[in-house]
Length: 75
Image (cartoon, rainbow, N blue to C red; front, side):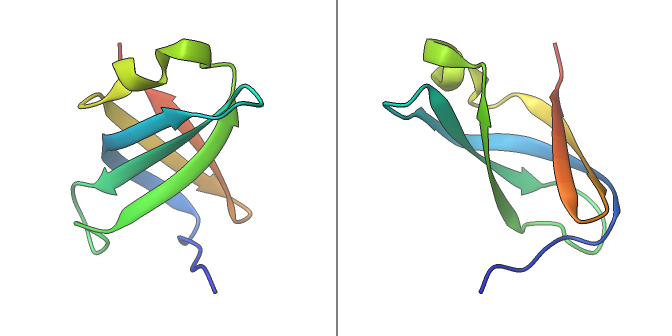
């Protein structure tokens, strides 16, 4: 059973990403600070297209609200 992060804000770094045939992407992020430092979170999303691999090494912020994660990638 997958664990869910508590509601809050987490600084992270993209460590893996790949695109699926259906147009979605799987992105793995490691949390870089706080009590969850070093944990890897996997999220799936749409709209990245063939740019998923360009996210490798990109800093991100994971915001969890009501158990649902939202990811913002830094420019």
